[in-house]
Image (cartoon, rainbow, N blue to C red; front, side, top):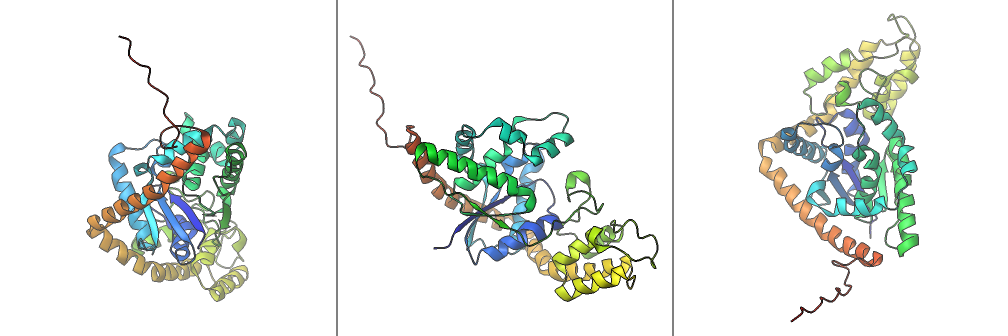
Length: 339
């Protein structure tokens, strides 16, 4: 049988090129090799302030992005995290096997904490719920970028502690590093993020995408067209690695260093390749946006399938821990009423 993969995406706003290249495109490819379970992790998205009225639209838009990127819902499970209550139940249990010190050392917690005036428990415990997401489905492989390896290692440690205490229940999931280099925002300095207003939305029409590319930061030391550039510090070149052919990447690297091409030339080539690859993605997205009932049906069916896996696993967890409920343990006798 194929190994099981679990991965999730937060519905926090428009899905951008970083999400597409780093995760969604890879998700579509993996369904032919693994037993894939993908979640729209809305509980993770509530660790930062958000307008409640926007959440349903964000969940819908994230589902559209996943499906339009090529994920086949007949070959993979796609569902909404909050519609499977076992996620938070297991998250609470796994919190008992996680040290606060380990959570405080998480790089992403430190980075997010600097961005927020008031840090909350959800932000600190984010990796515990993430571990629950994975272990609830006994995920064996998790596709991650380098920035998520630390979280996955903590997940492995949590699984190990639980198994040592209560017996073998969970596998220790292995990372599957994405082959795509980390794409920064159009500022060229920070991770692509809507909160930083530095993204290129995945479903932008070609004209809007060009306007963002045209003004994107490249090698800041290259002041004139005749100056040689340094692709190693240019985020546009990183995008070429994700969206251009190997031959084009070699050519851009060579010609940029020798000033054979200018930054606008480089961006125009990238824009052409982005337009070509994303044209069928946009076409699928337009169809899904026009038929929201299709998306809802897919998510409903995915939730049903996810609950069918999560329920028995939680019964196994409760049984291993000696908890009642669905563990099969006898209920305590009820005292007889006094006459």
